[in-house]
Length: 424
Image (cartoon, rainbow, N blue to C red):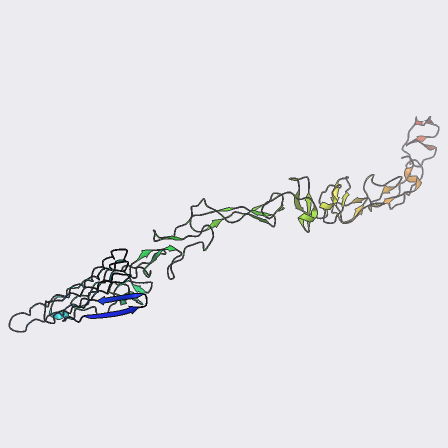
């Protein structure tokens, strides 16, 4: 039985008539199945094609009881017809959906009805209607959802695929795939831009190396490995140059220490010009790389006396050998040198001035006059300054000192001893 219906709408801009095809109902007694009615014809001015009729599949027939085997059930309903085309820039009618028949599976084979074909495009630019979804077989859908309709799990769908919240024609799990696009619900397509919610994101969130969807591939696409990325910077005496993408979403930048241990700018290394530029605990060595920041030296470390700023103490003093050493204090007077540890001032060798001598205690001292006498002594000498007493070495009867020699009396001629003796 057909049940035609029509809707008439009056719009301020003109007449808009939307015709609806009558849906065909299948025979309830077996194999006569009605086709869906055709969509309404679009009006001639900016109208829209009527919706396609829905083909309702006939119920499957039941076999006749008796002595002979049951007769087979009737076939499922036929596909609904496509919607009619709009005459002017109207849109083609939507496709009809094949409805499932209501047959009892146990009494006969079930034949699935298929959806209606797409509506014909308008003659002057109208858009064709989409194809209708397939109907279920004679046994019925069993409550399953058709492609393009909402779902929670794959078990809800006749296609056994639930993706992006709708029943889909495939599992559609790629980062750059989607089954929920407005233009094609239920059909898995590739997308452009960022992955859709629920799909794995592309690596490299933002930046020159980040992956994106290009509308052609299921997976994220990344810039070539040679693509420059990141900004050059120099900080804390470390230079980080412009990097390169690794082709997988990561920007690789390798930091290196400045050879001068100094950033001349925010993007490059360079020579220092003074200690202040190097910061606390460092000094600028102008003789290395035109200016290199170095750590200041502790006491006891060799230094150049012309650049005492290299020492943490700020003092570079000559040691016992006359070489510079970082010293805890400035040395002068009776202690003009710094000891090897750089902790105290001392004297050494000929470092004392005038007639002063360097005592064993490391202090310059002026000794007693006998200290300067010749090596020949007829009496003991106490030089003072903490030095040991020097014993006489020419003290026998009839002996005299002749220069540095001890001689027998009368044998010293013109400062030369002709009869030396060792008698003391």
